[in-house]
Length: 308
Image (tube, rainbow, N blue to C red; front, side, top):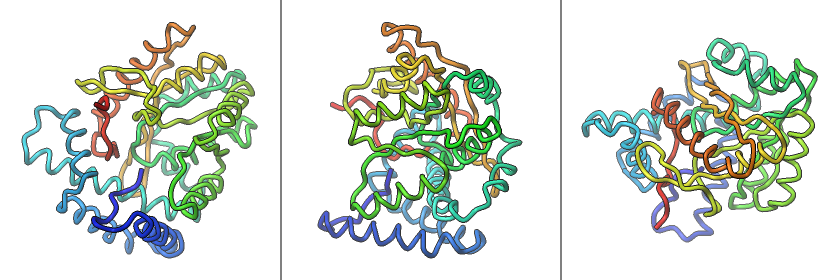
């Protein structure tokens, strides 16, 4: 999910500016200490909040669904913290390839909750699908999981899907970035190839991680989510059913300035095709409960309601 582009710029120019900005981030920001980059990214987040562009307005509307009783001032503060959390994700994305995976794992380990049952499933040789909303730093959560699964002798152990980004240079950088973290990455614009790779991973007893709080295909399941209608993708539930994998909701969070966490929910059963829609609703319910615990770490700068 990218931030809003500049107003009035031609599309190709916006893409070129975005590509150059991300390239600079990985080349420069990722090599600077947090004490230098943190205030800069916070200031950028605060500026974006004051400007109140489309992404900020969508975030405010989404957070209002999480906190329907919040007054204007409380919601203003929640949006400000949410934008700073989102900026932290990008700051860490630039730095993560150069960070020590063991140090990341150690900083996160005390703040991981509910993962034991899903790891026991993997130890038993059964695959696991983790369905996540856009929250916290899901890449750091993936790094943690890679280290945990390596202890079980599974390397590489995680397959995930990425949407094609523009410009192409930015997309290639994201592929290289996520692969550098130890993930197998497949692209959403090759649905058959992606499905084969995901299914193969799960049937081999590995793990698939999918962002699942927004339906990009327009073919998702209509659910009740955070007190209103929404459409969420059926892919995680369908994959769990067809592969025999366990489906778990998960929510990545920030746990202090130099730490991260994740909350993993109970398995959601998908015994047959008729249970898929019920499983997607169960995911929506679980996401709602998890997001409500720390809404500022939910980086949803896009609509969640049913289009039209």
